[in-house]
Amino acid sequence: MVEPLLELKNIHAGYGEFRVLHGIDMVVNPGEIVAVIGPNGAGKTTLLKTIMGLTTLYDGRVLFNKHDLTKTSPDRRVKAGLVLIPEGRGLFPNLTVKENLLLGAYTISSRSEVEERLKTVYELFPRLKERENQRAGSLSGGEAQMLAIARGLMSSPKLLMLDEPSLGLAPKIVAEVFEVVKKLRVERNITILLVEQHVKESLELADRAYVIQGGKIIASGKSEELRNLEELRRIYLAV
Amino acid sequence: MFEPTAFDLSAIGTGVVNGLVLGSLYALASLGLALIFGVLDIINFAHGDILMISSYIVYLVALSTGNPWIALLSSLALFALFGAGVYRGIIHYVLGKEPLIQIAITVGLGLILQNLALALFRAEPRALPSTLFPYPLSIGPLTLSANRVFVALVSIILCILVHYYSTRTKLGLASRAVAENREAAWLMGINVPLIYMATFTIGVLLTTTAAFLWMQIGPVDPYLGTIFGLLCWIIVALGGLGGVAGIIASGFIIGVLDSLGSIFLTPSGKYIPMYIAFILTIWFKPRGLFGRR
Ligand SMILES: Nc1ncnc2c1ncn2[C@@H]1O[C@H](COP(=O)(O)OP(=O)(O)O)[C@@H](O)[C@H]1O
Ligand SMILES: [Mg+2]
Image (cartoon, rainbow over all chains, first blue to last red; front, side, top):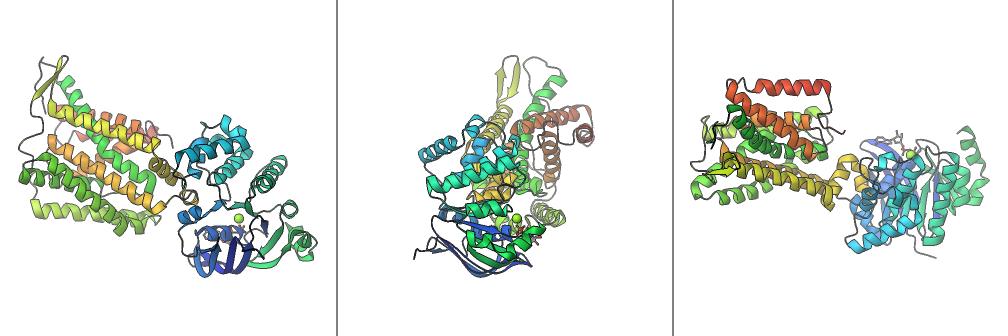
């Protein structure tokens, strides 16, 4: 059996007094794409933020790459190899495309290494190179999401987490985003934890998935098993 | 305040030149406030009083050692500790809290500093007995005191350095990122509290430097902070947030209005043109004359 890359043990977390997650256990193995699906307000975003250390943790442990990060500050979690591309992308709209990318490499001190990464990322997304001196706020929705992904790659994360990357995008662009995620795994062997509302597409992309509702995991397993799950149909027929 | 002039320049000409000198110093004094407001999103109502207390420290050390440079260095060292300490001890706990709490805590700090000065030094103004460069300097048709030229040059150079810091350095870029989106900045691996502390301390040190320069051209009394605090606010509001150039330009405007006002109006009446300029700007351009946000 392989050693898991990320392991969550009995996570209870929320915002101040407001408890959202009630005992989450989860494992992500190296090289996997794991999807987290569930209705609005289920706590998916809270879960990803908790992995980054941006919420109040009442109980439980976050283990990553053989280290206990439970009490580690968010900036050190990035240094450890965790990257979250947040819901709504979290770009710096008044900074240029290039400045956004450089901030993605903030934890890397070697200048030549940063230049190297910048080159690689521009090869992957040539549109960003064309727009490197434009304000990030001036990009279209699809370009902005590509910038968010590119920025996430700048620190060469071991685990890349994406929170609803397709939110607010046209169907054609959504397909492009899923293509990119697939490519990241195939070409770069990056482990991915993906939160999505597009259930069908994410189950096609992911190896395994967790279904979360009301701050608890109500189902989990291989994607093809979950696809036929009656419960999932019931939740999502309403969506 | 008239300066010796080679040709008998008109009062207005002299007033404008003095106003530009004053304006560059005002710009420098305002930068710390703008920096802290931009990154920490907190209005530091103790800003003027920090400048006032710094001025006393410069005055006291310069007087007792006879060396103004020792006064500068020791006040910078002291206020580096003061800035970091005030951030960690107070500001850190009120960031993101309701504005009323932030106002109360920084107004309170300002009052403590002001009353400390009143208790220790009484109300009478104090000025350094000698200035750094007490001789006239001829630049073309103008003759200025070398001292004022020095004050203006150092102020402008420091403003440009701050611009360079904010746009060209990694720490500056990180602090702009924190200013725009605190949570996303965390996600980049930026140590956000450290950026807050560094920015607050840099802001205080700029203010301390402005205090040192002020002591080369003017006196300090316990109410200096009230006046400076207000002027700095007007300059930040006029200049709009996000640009050093805007701060310098509005510093010049306020400096010239101040200088001309003290020629043609009574000491308290000289603030009237500034207030009018301020109110008109806020009325017609609420984002400031050069504001971007
Ligand atoms: N910053 C916050 N402060 C307080 N409550 C929040 C915050 N963000 C989200 N919540 C609450 O936490 C619950 C879960 O939200 P979230 O994790 O965003 O769900 P999802 O991403 O699955 O839609 C919701 O009830 C939401 O209102
Ligand atoms: Mg969400």
